[in-house]
Image (cartoon, rainbow, N blue to C red; front, side):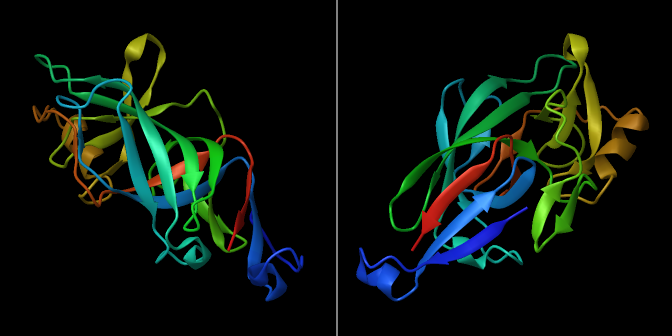
Length: 204
């Protein structure tokens, strides 16, 4: 759930004019973003840092215009034989358009996979089960699909294919497709950041 408030502290002209907004997100809330640079399972390395831009054109997020969410590559493994390339991402920091920085704990979630819903004007994950860990896998015809990493490193394909049709990845894999490749997330790729802890910040 998102809480918005306007502060009227006289400590600054912006605040005096009522332009300081206190924003709070709860764990499980989702922030839509677009990738700023290309990430690939055969080129990215563990520890690589990247940035995303908050998709402020998305309904309910116009107040976050200009904000960035920073992330880190947790794991990148290239395609090997019949094993698809894998890319594991985590999100660590929010930077607002006025230059302020706030620590953040977030994980990846798809925006079109039926695992999110809209509540109180924003996107919310239907489950906050931290045991469910999603990574990008090089499977199907698209740039990569979100897969649930089960015990022993086994993959469970989620019902989403980036850059493709809903469910297309699942249909191809269940049909015995041999389309195994590296993950290649280009700049502009849309994704969701699921907050694993509450987040509060000020936005001018």
